[in-house]
Image (cartoon, rainbow, N blue to C red; front, side):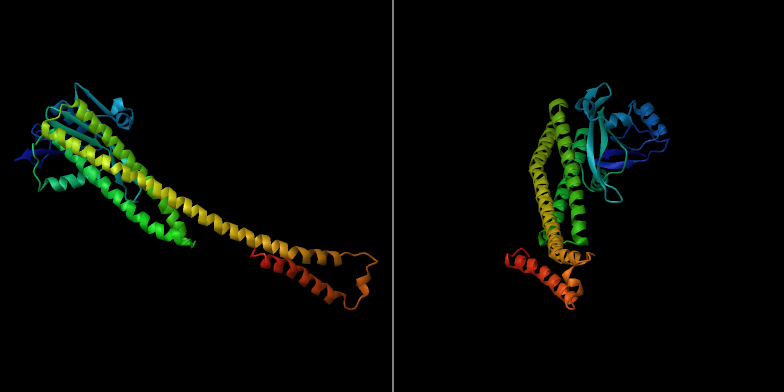
Length: 316
């Protein structure tokens, strides 16, 4: 899908992108999973070649942040959650050339959707491609900050469940959610650090206008403030995971102790029963009229003796 936007009084407005409408007036060309015809149109009308899928997946710094004859290129991660609430990072390719911003992505992303909604009512300050790029980065950082807050809130709820130590379906679900939150936190951190690298490249290499230079530095400061919070999430997750494993081990030890005690309690009666179950011809108790009740009483006493001993030692 191809979308185009132009500036009118420093406010973004959508352009019609039918074949009859040229793209030359657009300041922002946004492509989501473009087909071959859309790629060819951008190439023919604006002379801009677009990144391929292998180029989007490359993680080397030299392949993600560079400048060549086709413009300034930045490939940056954007966080998303799909319809099944599975978190992930999707790479967006940004290219700035001749005062125009090109964005290429493989899916619809919350940060882009939110920015387009805001752009309907908010005007840009300087109205250039660099400001547009940094505005998208600002929106991304806001989304990541909200995600960190959501993780904090979820961890507080999980903390109450885990610290109660009562295992059941709710406890099992809490452990599963804890693993998911750790995965989300890791993806958020990866996105923050990738954005930090992209902005550092912009500040060093892009010769940003004065307003955008300060804007980029402000975003970098926001990232610096978020990274410690993100790190503390991992510490909290690790603490809760260790606490949960500790409670599980305690419960398992209780179960093992019960089985051990039962085994020891029943061992002496079993020995008595085995002794009197032997079929030798000469056994003095075989013809004793009270032999059977005496053996039963002996078995009961043999079982009670270790039980009372364990009880006295506070092993039960």
